Image (cartoon, rainbow, N blue to C red; front, side):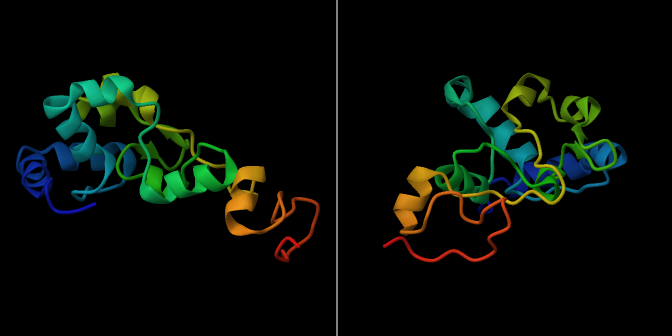
Length: 145
């Protein structure tokens, strides 16, 4: 989430890749989004990608640690591969970036209105009850006693 991929994004902009991806997803790119990060890893650290289970953002890692669920918010997933109309990843956008082989790393976007609840591990880390906030209608959570 820093500027190391700035040159790569500039090259993708110059060669028309950013515009092509935009045509498939309506999204642009920035140095910290999946396209330049995965492209960098694919070129310089392919062993890292072979060991990877998921390509997510920092917020996704925190959410997984607290809830046990692997997911991504659709607004983040559009950067740059999710087609916001179909809510699926656009194979042509991945292909434009030469990243078809990494599609399996992209988590399914959460359904609209999804609220992730704490699992036992996350609740223990925060001192809150599991299943907070409750899908059964409890809107506030009190610290565990």
